[in-house]
Length: 264
Image (cartoon, rainbow, N blue to C red):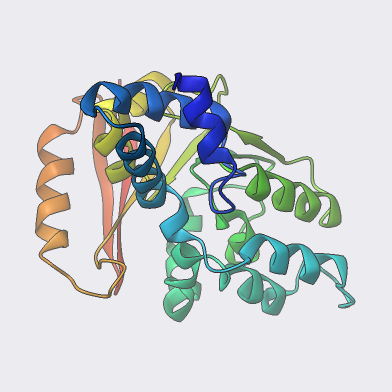
C-alpha cells in the first residue's frame, strides 16, 4: 500500500476521520519504513493518532458541543460561564482544569490585555474558557489538527460575534504564519517533542511572541503522577532557548504552566 492508500484506510475509521489528512500522511510516511506488514503499519499509525489526538476526546464531544450551541437559549452567550463549563467538560484536557478554572485562567489572563492577539496551537476546546479571562483579547487564532474542532469553534466564534479564527494546522510540519503578542501551547509541548525532537522549542523561537504560556500535564490519563512534574521541569528548563526568560511558573493539581517573556 502507498502512503495515500494507508491514509485512506485510517480516515475510514470513525475515530480519525476528522484528523487533517496531511497529519495522517506525515505519520504514515514516518511509520512505513519501520514495519513490513501493512496491518502493522496501519496499527502503528492509529496508535500514534490515539496518543496525540483521540485520547483527549470524550465520546461524541464535537456532536454534543454543536448540539449545545445550536440549542442555546441563554440570555447572553458572551457572559454565560455555565455554558463555558458545559463545553469545556466535553474535552479531557479542558475538563481537567474545571476544578480550578477560575484560579488558572485568572492568573493566565494577567498576561493577556484587551488589545492582545493570541495564537493557540493545538487549541482543542481552550477557546471556550475565554469567559474566565479578565480581558477579552482583540484577536484569537485557534489552531488544531481536527476539522471537527475547527467547525465547532467557528460556530462559537460566530455566536459570540468576535472576529476570531479557527484553522487546521499541523504544527509539526508547519509553523503558523501569524504574528501575535501571546502564544498558548497547552499540553502540546510533549506531543510535539514526541513527534519531532526540538520542534516545540523551534516554534517558540520562530514565532518569537512577546509572551508564551506553555503547560505540561502532571498526571497521566489514568490519574497517576509518575514523577511528571520533575521530568517536564527538567526537560523544559534545561533546554529553554537563551532568548526567553521564565516570568512565572504555576503549578496546579493536574497541570504546570510556564509564562515566558521574550528578551532578545
